[in-house]
Length: 307
Image (cartoon, rainbow, N blue to C red; front, side):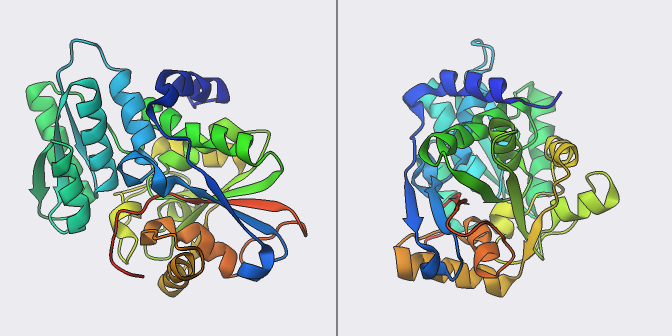
């Protein structure tokens, strides 16, 4: 079953004011070299520094009250979000991460009180280790992008977009496993189209749409720690197929240019994976009517290295 707007609205009612309603920043088209307004949805100002807090909190709040412990696997952002969400509702958390994850993201997970388990390899290896613990000890696994609760929580961002930018022509966002894309599409279906953006080195949705199903694909490049799952989620693939959506691809250089622009022109310190949607705009891959509004989600800021 795919999520619908009513499911996202239920998640929003559950979360209430426990997550931040993040602001938007309007860039005039001439600042970016396009004929339309670019409206940045600044989700890097969310709790834990990324949109992941929405899905993580909705997931843990949906658990049986008898549950006392959860586990998760992540390149960093989801792990921090689960650690924060678990602490907020009085649970303990075990978080598995690749040992190569960004140090700042690892530090944040520890700060929120989770037990950190570095794993040799990539996010897929961390997820395998996480599943092993979950199955052995009977601990609920809070999946980063491919469960109903996660995507509906993430989709609450889409409801905020509808309120803040009622004339939006298009929403662009980065896509790794596709949880944010799935949730926002469910929230905005029949109202505003949502286009996922990926890097050429993490093209999981692109590969899945070509193959006709989610398939494993390696990840590399600057955005891999936030956009590098083993494969795109089944929910994301199904909702993309339902809407006939394909992802836009951007290069490493284009991501770097967008990230520098965000910092130098708007003082927005986004991580690489959060800069891919703007990269598609700046690279001329997005078309919209003159004078219209295109929403670009800046999904996280948990990499403090200067762009």
